[in-house]
Image (cartoon, rainbow, N blue to C red):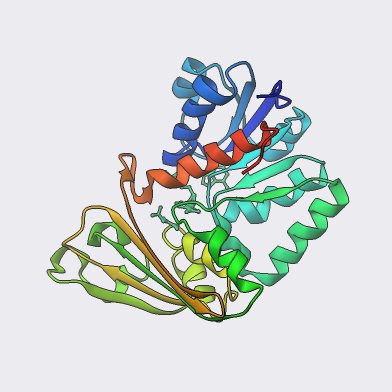
Length: 270
Ligand SMILES: NC(=O)C1=CN([C@@H]2O[C@H](COP(=O)(O)OP(=O)(O)OC[C@H]3O[C@@H](n4cnc5c(N)ncnc54)[C@H](O)[C@@H]3O)[C@@H](O)[C@H]2O)C=CC1
Ligand SMILES: O=C([O-])CC(=O)C(=O)O
């Protein structure tokens, strides 16, 4: 492996994903780098001090610290408010909250910001997989891409499903949403980022079909993708362990960020 060129890493959002990623970077991938964070939580000092983190109260201060790489794992709002400024300042950004890109205007703004700053916006596969195959297949034409997401009922707490269903008393698999990835990304910003990753890899936000299920029979986050086209057919199923700090979020989402950062350091990129 070549000498790491990433000496300063900024992390926006120090929740379930952010803490996992930080731990992996500090212990495995970038042990000699310096780390700074921005988070909205109350009193993060105890954690940041024990981890030797510089704590900033806003993204402007993080940018002034001149990180080589910023990792967003905070939510859609952070992609809107913080990521364009990082890119314009010439800082590469890895984002977890890829569902924010369902907003075409934001997508264009991010692309312009990246071009203006000669920086890259690095999108991760997150809690889903098989996107490389869908991206390859799309050149020959895709007829249909379907995503089905299944999580335990409590993982849909705080979503629009809460208004329609009594999640605690669901006792059989219940479809809580059927529609496009465009709708799912916006309505379920903490649960359906994977639909955006599938959409951007395949037939786009409007044509990607999405079904979301609250299933009392599962204790993991189950993601299925089916695609059909000139290439043939694809069917994948992931059964993801959730992170202990956030049942909505799969461990694989954090692992995919770690892998994306590790890739920045490799001469042989796969
Ligand atoms: N691509 C994928 O497959 C997945 C993406 N995600 C995305 O990652 C995000 C983070 O996930 P978790 O770590 O599980 O969530 P979490 O709720 O455990 O942590 C989020 C952290 O970000 C902080 N935060 C929120 N808004 C902020 C802002 N504007 N600026 C700074 N800090 C802010 C919160 O205080 C919290 O500490 C989710 O909201 C979702 O958008 C989550 C799961 C999978
Ligand atoms: O982590 C997961 O299983 C998926 C998720 O929450 C998302 O796509 O936002």
